[in-house]
Image (cartoon, rainbow, N blue to C red):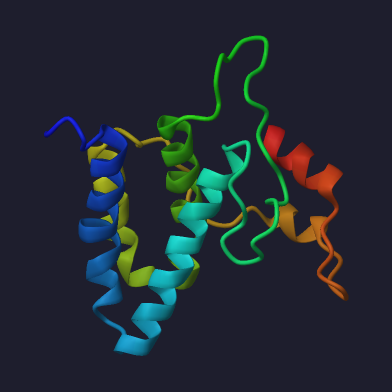
Length: 148
């Protein structure tokens, strides 16, 4: 790869091109574009969570959670490998609900990239962290879920 194409850039483009695109091809253009925008926003928000200053893609405010820069055992969370790992898990969380036709191709691509211990599906605990009437998040509960 050329030096400006990092492993993370390659993995992201590969997952979008060979993982998501075959499933999106089953949808009419407006629906495919909507899902593509949601995937893009989700990817950006993974980057924002693992950044000191980047904002949420949809609200343009701070993300609901922001990773610490480091811990006693991890020297830096704010890097491309961590952001890509967030994206991989986010893709796995939504693929069956959003674009089930992309599940087999996306899971094959992720496994080929050595992400073979990914759990697919949405974590139901997250629903309990939001007030269903107002949509307001319980940030402490979200932080507890994220730390698991």
